[in-house]
Length: 266
Image (cartoon, rainbow, N blue to C red; front, side, top):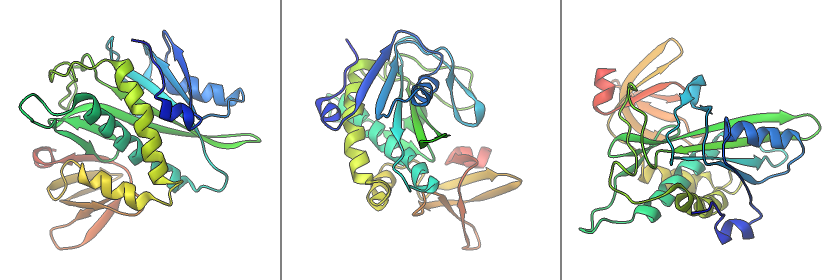
């Protein structure tokens, strides 16, 4: 199949650039912005040799997987903390696209896609998708953001300190082009709900409805601090709210986070 945008994305002004091979779709998206590309523009690669994950980690490539980044022009005056909540928009868009691609099984079973704070998508508790936002301020233009989305479609990297999976391993006959088309439409839907941050309350509610580990044990390492408690919610800024054993609450904006059984083992 060929990578194409859903008509809903085209009607909303999104465009598409497809490459046979790139080091990183996000690097390409930001280079296009520096060269004057206004966006919004999806950059897709059939092969990605230098993908990036959070905190400088690499993203392993397996042929047939999904690698795409969206160059999104930040509206004038939109605060960086609002831009950061685009990660939840991306997570919701991926989760909705996956559900539409995979649907219920023959026996009516609904796939267990879950959103892991802050920017992963899980299937059956194992990592299926990673999302990375990269914000850059361009001279004379202002900020742009690249939203990188890597999805394990045909295979998952092995030997990592956490469980991974792919759609193929889970028995879903989905390919990257078909999934991307659904994603391009789901992004438009979620981005409109978000409404430049004004609608984050709606996004927050939808994200929490699909959240992994909600109301369960959580352990968060942020800087020199190590917190253990219960994953209570995310707040109006998208921060993870941990309820401590003494009833106190701490909002975590970044850090290494473990949920469920992994919280006890971490």
